[in-house]
Every structure is written in structure tokens, then in C-alpha cells.
Length: 375
Image (cartoon, helix red, strand yellow):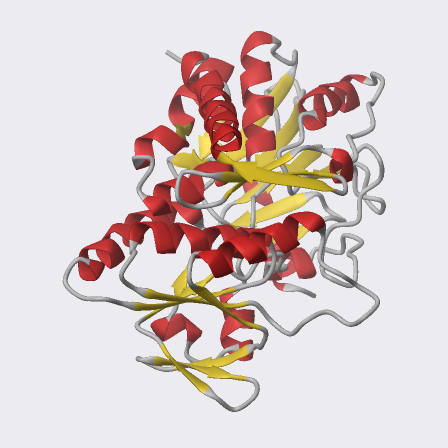
């Protein structure tokens, strides 16, 4: 018997039992304050779901829009400009908010175990927690990470700590190492360079892919941009952290005052033990409608998908679902440092100040849509 099953056996009274007539409304749980779940909240304010109890489970009082995090790190935005408060959205939607973390999920019994020991049953579940960093796993892969590393996720915690790094950078030139792969780590490295121009910035980007895989035009352009900004790129793994250095897989040691852990795409322990069908990378396997292939009452979204706001109400009322858009063909606008941005669309890429203006307009418009819709 797993931990959640044992907890349920001993705490069956914590599951809602309905009113005196035995009626129990169906329950939709929004797990996480990701952008897709926030869109669901905004839609619920305009189109409430009848006879449905809705609960948001999210530990932080606000959600930072990921697209604006590099701009915040670079000093282009104040935190309030790229953060969306949850309380006004929750109040307007008329739902319940539990400011908790999830500890376990049992897909068989459709139950969540929260960090205060309480349980929540769901008839439908929307998992949109944003990027997760499994600190136990990272510590196993990079000993010393929990003691010496600055984790980028959750972004709300990172954003509270980043100003301290900036204050330290005003007293002396720092040696900063951004540890992570993918475009998000590249953006962060350029943002650090912009905010701390006198510091040494290194991206520890992992080994080069094999010959069967080549970087996308967008990644190639970002790499060229980083080199122009004096950012060192090391294609190696970080295998350990000390107080003033990063140990690399090749045996070398990189002098470092501030290691930023930008490792993404990890599986939280509660998800790995949930009984949901998972990919080899640990992600919830979904169909074209973002439903779990093993438990269709569970929706899972890792990006800013607008299809969820239509599909969740449709699923609860027996309506028609809409396939999510193929993000491979979407326009990507990324931070490029020095008041410029990089755009990628399919096999095309471009950069420059006009793209920076477009990105800033799009980012501010996205956040303003939630701020203006709440009193």
C-alpha cells in the first residue's frame, strides 16, 4: 500500500460527503497556477460552471509570466509588472483556493494529498504547475546543488532571491554559471549578462547532441548572440557544486560564485508515483485534447495553452473538445539581451530592436489581460 492509499484508509472522513440529502456536486481541481489554469480562471468568471465545485491548489500568491522572467532578471521589469496576483482572479471566478503544495496523487481513487495532510477528491483534474525542479533528483545528479545552487523554479522564490545577487554584484565582479539546456537557459544567461555587465557569465549547456540532431535555427541564432555578448558556453555536464566552483563531467573545475540551476522538464515525485501513464522523460502522456491517455478525467498542460479553457468546461458538460495547437509552428519571441529579442518560426529566425518592441508589447498585453479583468 502506497503512502497516499494508507492515508486515505485512515482519513476517509476528509473526503467531501455532500449535503444532508446525499447530493455531492462534482469537483474540478486546478492543480498549479500556470498560465493555462489562469486562463481557465478568467473564463470561469465570465462563464461559471453550474453545479460544479471548483478548487485551485497553488502555493504562491501570484504567478510570474515565464516570458517576462528574463526581462526581470535583466532589470527591464519590476516584479509587479510580470506577476499576476491570484486572489483577484479567484474572487472573481467565485472558487475556493487552497494555498498548498501537492504531496501525492492517486489516479485510481482520483485523490490528491496536500502538504498539510488533507486530501481532495476530484472528478476532473487540470495539472498546470509550470516547470518543476525535483530538488532531490538534482541533488543526486549534482551533489551540493541544494546547499550552493540557486534554483530558478519555482520562479516566485527565485524572483525574491535574485535582487540579493544583484546587490552582491554591485560590490564586485561575480562569476556566474547558468546550468541548464534549452532556450530558457540561454535567455537567462543573456539576462544575467545584461544585469551584471562586469561579471563573468558561463552557460553549462550539457554535451552536444549526436550527429543525428542539429540545433534549430533559433538555437543557432541564440548561440551566436551569446558569444557576441561574451558569454562562455561549455558543452559539458555539471556533476557537483562547491562553495566557489562547479565540477564538470570532464574533470575540470569552473570557478563560480553564483550557480543558477535552470534545469527544466523534470518529474515531481508525486507525478512519478501517480499511476498516470508517463513518457520515458516522466511527462504525463496526453492525447490531442491534452487528456491523460490512461485517465481521461485528468488534463495536463505544460505550456500556455488556450485550448484548456475551452476543453475543461466541455469535458464536464459533455461538449465537443478541440485539439490543441501544434506549438512547433507557433511564433516564438525570446529575450536576446541589450534591448533586442530573437524570433523563431519554423525554420526561420530573426533578431533586432523591432522584434524586442514586438515581444515587449505582446508580453505586457498578455499580463494586462489578467490584471484588467480583475478588480
